[in-house]
Structures are given as C-alpha cells and as structure tokens.
Image (tube, rainbow, N blue to C red; front, side):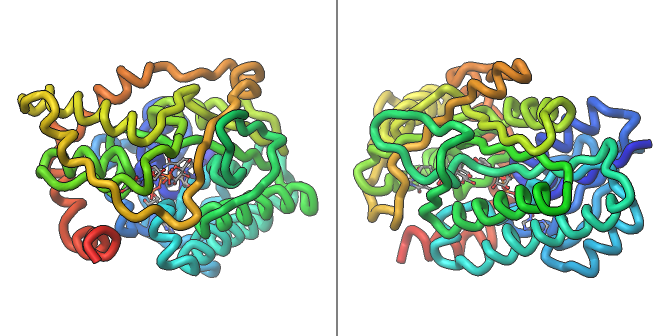
Length: 349
Ligand code: NAD
Ligand code: DAU
C-alpha cells in the first residue's frame, strides 16, 4: 500500500484534505501528523477516524529527531504539508513562533523526505501548501501569477515565502520531487474563529462588535475550502514536478462589502430585523503592514489540470453559515480557554 503523510490535518484546510483522501483513496494508507495546537481539533475529522487505512499521529514538525524517526519507520511515498502557524495577527505579536513552525518545521520534513528517498525518487512527491500572501500586495488592478515576485509584508507571509524558497532549493539542489501551490483566502466549515468570516459569524451570534480593521477597503479573493481540497488532490496526483500553481476563487470582495453581505444573511438566518447585525460593525485600529489587495490568476491550474471552483460564493457562504449555526458546540468549545485570552489581547486591550 502507498503511504501518504498529511501534516496539519486537524486544522481547517487540512481536515478537509484528510477527509477527501481517506474517502477517495481506500487503497492508500493515510497518516495525519498534527501537534494539536490551539488551531488543531480532532473533532474536525471525527467522521473518518475509524477508517482502517487512516492513522492519526500527534507530533510536532519542529522536533527533528522525532520527524526523522517517523519517516524512517513509515517510508512515506508522498508528503502533503499543511501544518503551519497560519494567522497574520498572531505573527505580528509572535514572529518567532512562525519561523519555528513554518520554516524550521518545513526544513525538518524536507530533510527527512530527502533521507528516505535518497536511493530513488520514483513515484515520490513533496507537496508544499502555501499562500498568495508571499507575493505581497496588489494595487487596485492586476492579478498574482506564478511569475509574480515574492514581496512578503507580514512575518507570517515572510515565513511562508522562506519555506517556499527552501522547498524549491531542495528540488534544484538535491533533486527532491516537489510541487507548490499558492492559494487565496479560504472559508468554510471548521474555519477557526480568529479569521474574518468565522470570527464575525461568531460575534454576530453573540451580539458582539464586528472589528473591521482600518477603513475596511481591503480586498481578498475568497475560495470555498472544499474547492481548495479538490485542487490539492488534483495537483498531488497530476501536477508537474518542480512546478508552482496558483489557486484562487475568482471572487474578490472588499472586506466591508463582505461584512455587510454576511450581516444581511445572518439577520435572515437568526430571524432578526433587517439591519440588526450591521449595527455591530465597529471600525478599529488597522493591522500593521496590512496588504491592500490579493487577487489570483488561476489560469495555469485551470488550463493544465482543468480545475475551477465548483461552488459560487453565494452557495459556499450559505453552506458555511449553515455549518456554524448547526455546530454551536464546536464553536463554543474552540472559543473557550486560550481563545478568550487571545481575543482580549487582540481586540480589547
Ligand atoms: P490552521 O491554523 O487552521 O491549521 C494548522 C494546523 O497545523 C493545526 O491543526 C495545527 O495543530 C497544526 N500545526 C501547527 N503547528 C504545528 C507543528 N509545529 N507541528 C505539527 N502540526 C502543527 O491553518 P489552515 O488555515 O488550515 O492552513 C493550512 C495551510 O494552508 C497553512 O500552511 C497555510 O499557510 C495554508 N494556507 C491557508 C489559507 C487560508 O485561507 N486559511 C490560504 C492559503 C494557504
Ligand atoms: O490569502 C491567504 C491567507 O488568507 C492565508 O495564507 C492565511 O493563513 C489566512 O489567515 C488569510 O489571511 P488574511 O490575513 O487575509 O485573513 P484574515 O481572515 O485574518 O483577514 C481577512 C481580511 O479581514 C484582512 O484584510 C484583515 C481583515 N480583518 C481580519 C480580522 C481577523 C478585519 O478587518 N478584522 C478582523 O478582526
């Protein structure tokens, strides 16, 4: 049986990737390695945990001897690497944590892969999941292509850019078979409520202020998380070695317009009078180094691999809101404890 290691599979995007691989590939042994940080939650993948070809491993990618031993033991054929510190605001208060996990952690996985594939790289693949934020910011026009230069502006995006560079360097220097994708903002079920959409859904439910950074005129390109998981499956199996693919939603929204749309939808869902949720909108201090606009040109993955988003934003947002409203237990469990301390520091101090 072929063996695939997915890292970060208890997190937001990783959980959808793990589910897809476990359900679609019964003849492949799927290993999910996750340190279960504040962002990792085994509830996200409860439905597949009993599958006979699935194994969860609790472990930290920054622990090199542990990673080396794990790779020697299992001799993985493929690695799909999602484990990361992923929130820009946290990277501003604790940049070093991002270097440790996103750069050193990735290095450890690269070194371990190189060691077990030293005799043959036939059928092997290291897939690094990255972000469009490595390209920095766009002005009012233009799109990020695979040829855009790297100009990261936050400690988070700098750490992801560094890890992208190391993956590429291992390909060039040691012949490691790799592929990288740089994706735009995901949204959907299991999204941790520190990020814009789930944070605002949670705050609307609890009648709490909706903290819009700066003037709200920042633009993001939103993609439904399951469409990202579909793209990852496609790139892992059909992408070309030593290539990068951009993944995006063809779906740009100014934050403030998105927040108004969310407020309208939540009013309907919660049977509140029109305009109730919008009254919670509060403009707050801007994020330092806030990137003005991200937008992806996803022509390459569309032309080469035939991928395009399968749901509209309207459909995806509807599914997302429904999921959060029907999973209030999940929401309250992830917003207790450490989350409260984070929330106070980020928004109330
Ligand atoms: P997330 O924060 O929801 O999940 C990250 C997961 O990694 C968690 O389960 C966490 O426990 C695990 N993890 C963190 N540090 C670890 C460590 N040292 N060892 C092992 N596991 C560790 O993140 P996400 O939003 O699902 O993002 C997943 C990946 O996709 C990241 O690499 C991120 O940079 C990238 N990405 C995210 C988005 C987005 O919009 N969320 C867009 C493009 C790319
Ligand atoms: O573009 C891909 C990236 O998208 C991923 O690599 C990151 O892991 C992911 O977190 C996301 O980064 P952003 O910084 O774009 O996402 P976030 O949800 O934090 O913020 C989206 C926009 O909303 C951004 O312009 C900042 C703004 N915002 C965010 C929060 C949390 C607010 O106005 N208020 C908030 O409270």
